[in-house]
Length: 105
Image (cartoon, rainbow, N blue to C red):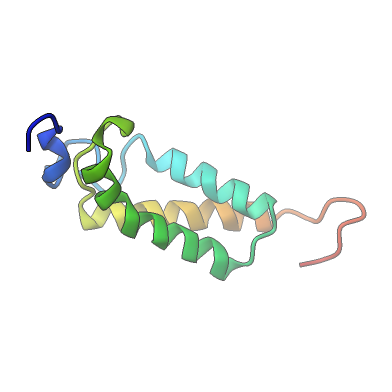
């Protein structure tokens, strides 16, 4: 396609960003989970948002490759690890005691 990043049209290779289970963006996914946990989202909402992002991410990379630092498609192992990272961040924050004045979840 003329004028479009061809990397957005292919799956990342092992060793590339998005090509292995863990990469530098795994931490960003965990941070998103931390924010969801601090926001006291229920587990099903955090998981739903994480899965929805992973489903939408590759089509978004095809449509808007310039927005992504690495527009290659996530390999399935990366998408699963990113979802797990979100939930790990969420769980870590939900394990904290409630703030003063906040009712128990």
